[in-house]
Image (cartoon, rainbow, N blue to C red; front, top):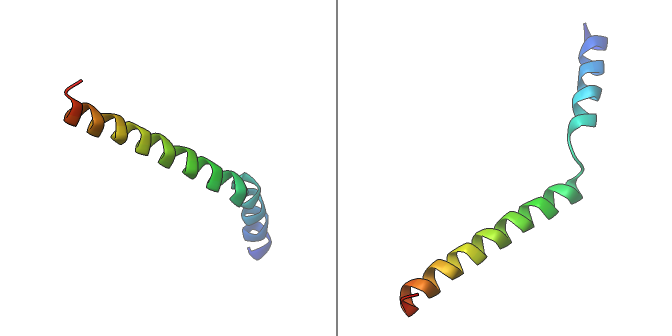
Length: 48
């Protein structure tokens, strides 16, 4: 029973991306959201 659990745990661990790629993806998403809101806020105040 524990050997099956250990094998399944290894399979799941291999599927999880490394920490560096998660940080890079999260940074790209945050940068995109910030750029989106900057355009909305400037468009609102400048009446574009």
